[in-house]
Image (cartoon, rainbow, N blue to C red; front, top):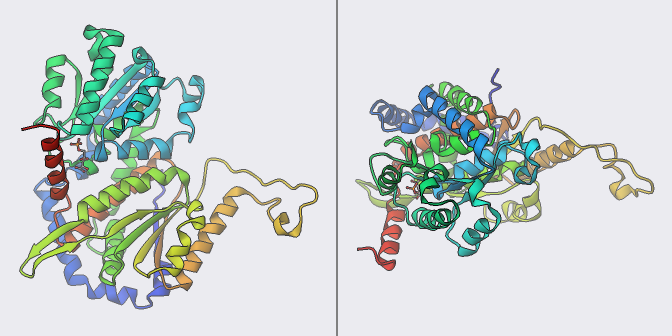
Length: 442
Ligand code: PA5
């Protein structure tokens, strides 16, 4: 049974007593956005919307991952941006926090997982230093098929692999995940005989985590991809209502939009879970690249967008929280709580504890974490900082699937509310073109 995640905006109501009326007064814009998104879905422009329901992809990924698990000790994702961040999010939220350091049998014999999303030579060389290439498979992921960082790393890896395993065995060690309709990688894969997994044409990089992009590394590490996709499908069914109070993604977008219009130009996501740190990075890319745009309408050209910021509880209580509380009131906070963890630790009693720390004894770490969560909510509210809570029942595939889908839908609704195209990234493309020129491409 899937336990739904919950959005609780009661603290936001404490700060803004007339929040509900204010949301009702936005109904014209909300209705227009809902309609706009429905039309995009009907025109099949929102490819991510269909990803939880692709039975053939589930089957294909399970078969390939099974064969990889039997043959390899290491699985390396080579990609960047949307072709890497979702992999990290799934891996770090669902697998053991020290997964790669566990002995093989504690990983059920599954390969270690690495994500190479950099061209810092220290990191690329560093990963090669520790891998036995004969026991390693590389999943090269690029939607466009030509991203310079990914393709540069591919060429280096191919060269090293060829020396290690021989040209004829290269195809056993490289899997290409790309859009079959464009770019260089698909042509290389066809020529070299690499196994190729397909990213649908209408699924953009940062919306692709539930496609083969994120699913293969997940399945290889033993994540239950059915649970993940079923959680996402569950959230899809929860997000069909036109009423923001009956549709969590629309509600999340409307809360953010309301805050943005009130000058909250920074949107902080603060999970009280280290294991959701990579969720924070994934969210930052999704929110920033989708919504930071120039809006063009009758009023001219206006730059819009909310700056996403990732914080982690409790660590950032000792770092960013001071700024959040006493600095400019220009932020909206989403605090994420995990209701139940896999295991807890009791804080033992010990002799000679003075009154300063004696209260800790007999309590447990989960209680401390939840207490700090509630303390942060309260101090934010006391200082009139807009904040609301997302509560996940646990860190399970069902919950992470829901969270991923919720945020992709929220971003889609927010794009409609802001009046921007949430699926392109024109300014980033400009930077890519300059890089090509500096690197000598015609
Ligand atoms: O969301 C996007 O489209 C981008 O952030 C891409 O994911 C990123 O630029 C990498 O592109 P590609 O997957 O084509 O290599």
